Length: 279
Image 1: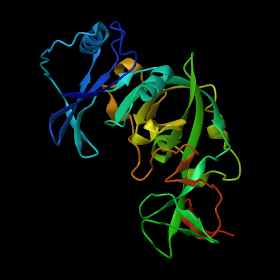
Image 2 (image 1 turned 180 degrees about the horizontal axis):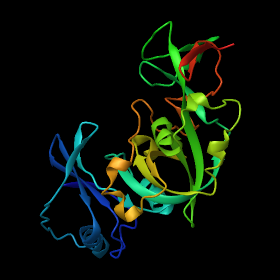
Image 3 (image 1 turned 90 degrees about the vertical axis):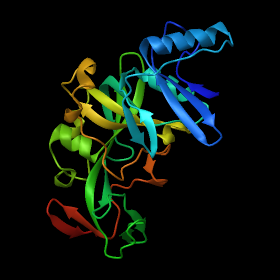
Image 4 (image 1 turned 60 degrees about the vertical axis):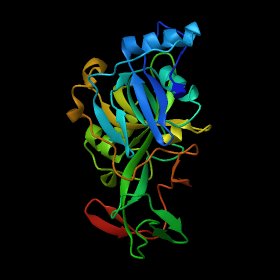
């Protein structure tokens, strides 16, 4: 039994972008089916016709992958920013995670939330400020040591719409080849400011956060300045995946509910290969 359908322009049979169909085949067995290209257009045609006749679909040549403990079908689709927003807004519930390819130009590096955060060297999570010291809520270590890592908000435009993409440490290291700990913390480094005006191909990871009413950003799990969208799917080795512990930013530009402070006090922070205490 079909319980829900997710996708953009579901009543337009000419649209061939991805459709996700949620089936319940047994009381406790839920299956997600992703339809692409002609199959997606055909399914939209069935929806728009209003007919309730039963039909049979044979699913072949699938590439299963585990996402969050659930099996799903992985394919990266080239979409616009408008498509990304439609994919989110047309969903009435959280479904499987998805990844998309979006080509856009960087308008500017947004600075209101800084460009870095202090990460725990033990688990890579953001350190929280507790009085005059830093604390890791996961490691619960009184002598926690932190390291400066990237968290950059990019205002991007694809020619028709704009959005805010959040890029974390591993992706930025892959792009600019400079460690965040070696840059000046107090202001926007030149190498980051120079991203403005440049065009990139972004690999976007849609997470459960994006299905919340107040989502404002999309998390980047891969970025390239030389791969064409048409060949992006076949060259995944060039795309560096997101780092463990670095999750999508919340509606208030934060991780795990706490706002970023690029200059917290207390604790120890590694600067390059040296540890330095906070004043």
